[in-house]
Length: 199
Image (tube, rainbow, N blue to C red; front, side, top):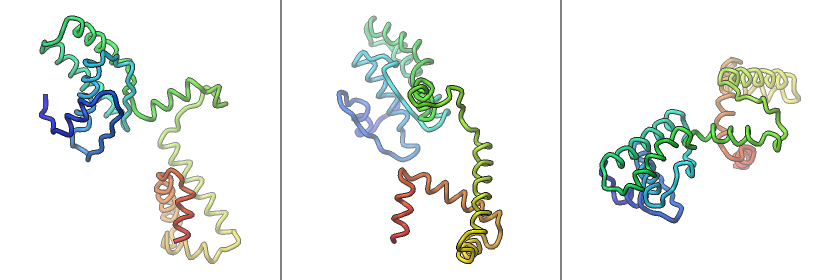
């Protein structure tokens, strides 16, 4: 078992309340979270199926499952637990493959698939592939350019094109897509844009 700092131990051992752990990449958040899950399973007799653990990538979700399984196996192998705890932990090992340790996207997708009838969407919907999304962005940006070139302020738009794209439409489209991606990262992109305009 790794040596945890006092703050990490506090995050692992605090029970009966919500906690927030903020730390830099590579600082041991995954180790702390997997240890916290094990601690709750052992000390509160919880089932792994009671947990929702979300990550940003499939690799991180797989690593989290693997770490939790390894920690449960170690707890069983190292002894020091009662027979009932050993049975409980063996059950948890069996439940891990079906546990809700997943990406935030997969979790949301499961909710949508389970409630499509409430959302009034086609149950055969699918997730857009990254390549398809890029093509749609490119097509939308190009259509917008065509509209703007024939719009009511061609001189103003022409100046923007020179400034942002250097007179090159391909570069301009690329910059528009990049800016759109940045703005979309805000929870209220239109409000953010409005605030920038006021400045």
